[in-house]
Length: 327
Image (tube, rainbow, N blue to C red):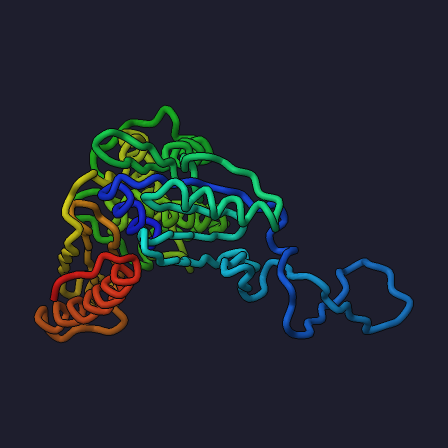
């Protein structure tokens, strides 16, 4: 998703057009280069015992493939980014499963790619990008606004907090949750489902990143109340999202910070960073550090090191996209 946000920031800055296409049964177009066998599904009759089937076509869950210079993902969770350079500029092609997003300043080049793909695959042209992987994309005169409005509404209805009291912040001030505080939940499945949904929501809502629960293994009632507090905050701020301004500078900026021994259970510190491309936030993280820091300086060195890894990767990505950063 950092790649997606970076591309949207560049599109807003350059005022490029972005189109979306959908490939029908994309995974069936891949030619297998190796022999793959699968076991028969449970309940399927077979004349022989221990029979397996040899795959003739790709299935979800396998590795990615490349066709006509473009990748059509077999794996359900993978995505690929392809860049084609020419004298007129670059073409950016983002593929996720059977969804394809293509962008460039030249409309003619986009039409050429669409024609090429249509000649080989059954593709539905969805026009200008409006909805992608749960993200609602709104093109405005001053830039691009991205939110997850419908996703938040569905989450609120799932929990049944539609008529709840609104709260201004994603978590209570000075609240420090403990691992063994309160009564264990009888069935933690629903709690984990809510936390998983909130984690996906951090794609556009970095304001809830720090408030996210870290007690997935043995959740308690107090932890569930904290999750409800976050959802009530979303109820009052469901229209918020990310804004990628047009004409802004494309200089990469990074900010990082850490607490010290902030976790009352493990005494571990928390790594936090936020990175901007111009004025557009494209990458952020809020995570407990892997080991205990003996001082606040050590905790800060750890977060600086982790942030530098992300900066180096982002500089490489921006260089590939044609927006190299000054040293």
